[in-house]
Image (tube, protein in one colour):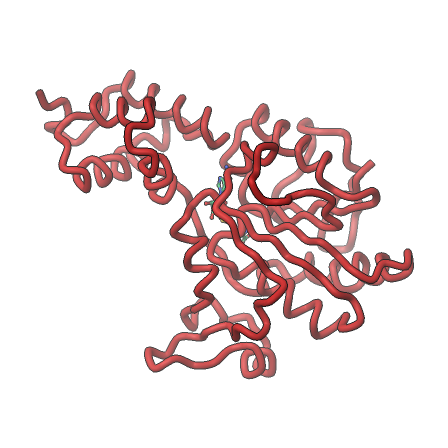
Length: 276
Ligand SMILES: C[S@@+](CC[C@H](N)C(=O)[O-])C[C@H]1O[C@@H](n2cnc3c(N)ncnc32)[C@H](O)[C@@H]1O
């Protein structure tokens, strides 16, 4: 029997889905986002040729089709990103964090891009490291809950819009122009960058080694989390960040009333965090 004739969820159906997404991912979609979630879930139900939301929820809850959870996350996540996003923060990286690591005698840095989306953030960091700190070796790990964006990150091909803030000389050096007019990040520069489909809420059970990072970027990811799940993620970061390691959140994000195990560092146009 169909329960989706008008393509709308009842309030209690929405609540069930809201709880499910929250428990699995930490993302909390308030009632004001009901229409957004409805559209996304109806798309999944149509793709599976179901005619019932209850059936769909059953599949999710009992993991009858394991990949369906990822398919749902592919739909509901917001993956907006671009190269050289938030220049003031990148300046802090270049003028403070990397030089300070060098002063402490570091020769190698491990960097995590948590919620890396389609790879623009980790590739930007790699360009900065190569251009400004060629004497420092590095490994960058990019993780995201959506396997679609991770596949895109691995492919490393971008529209002109995504690379609009890349300085011209870097564009010429790090990218080749495809026949379709896209910009492909050279394989040669990808060697120290690895991508994984991984849920931040499952960092502890990660099949890949995600620990002892000198810098963790987690920009514009936790804005979709409530306070409790933010705290959970921040505590995990605290365990996985090296002594003196840095945490960089999005420009408008803060740890105020979320965590006190990181120290806030103020720069003229950016705030970053240092592990206590
Ligand atoms: C708005 S994008 C930000 C991308 C990049 N950090 C930036 O600032 O340009 C947020 C990303 O976080 C990912 N994300 C959301 N919840 C996640 C979770 N629980 N685990 C891993 N990634 C998650 C989304 O899939 C999305 O690609």
